Image (cartoon, rainbow, N blue to C red; front, side, top):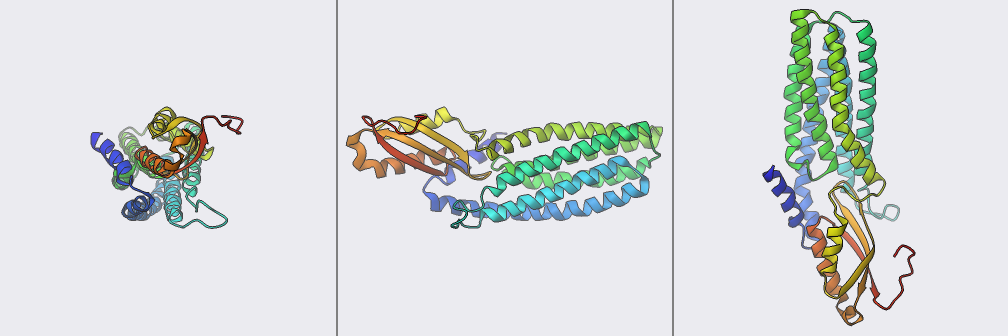
Length: 317
């Protein structure tokens, strides 16, 4: 855990010297993630085909539902990759922030796909409970062993960046959960092989659905919060305000807004009440504050100066 924490800590310090450096800092990571996504997409697509064929031959619901779920993972990985590509596209007259926000849309869409697939799995499992079918336990177990290997390997590709971006966290969560799901199918396959209790297949499908729902819920909540321009989960407004108040000549801070531009970049706007004496230094003050904020993972900041004797025109000051 501490190594992971250090990673995210250094991440916020690497780019703390102006925007140019920050942008440069992201590029190698994106290239490494780029290949992680592509490898994940290829491996998981191949596995979906194996599962569908095996599921149709054996009539195993847990194989087919898992294939459907893995297919949604492939779609999710592809969307996340597309979103990463779009963040590299510059801003234009129509989209002044570029397409960074697509990463938030994608993480929300991914969570919705997952929740929908859980509903389908649960519905199918309940139907099967009432009408159990004969299944080959050995085939189920064998196919799912392959699943454990592929999913665990794909999850491992994302593990070191999972705390830096919601989409990477989503990909990691999907894959890690899939490995657990495949393990469940292996166990039920073995039980069915020895006991011929075919209802185990449906029971495992339901357990799988609950496990996936638990992992997906926080992803859905976090991405919805960013979608609604809420304050990103790891941001502490009090801490940010205190950091701004440390700036030279800053008497008060109000009308402060913090939101996410993308799943990796945050923005802030604030009114700064400053001592009129310090106005000539405003350029330096701004530079210092931007530097401080970059240590708190806020990459874009806009400040409006006000004087202590001036009345703020905004109604929520």
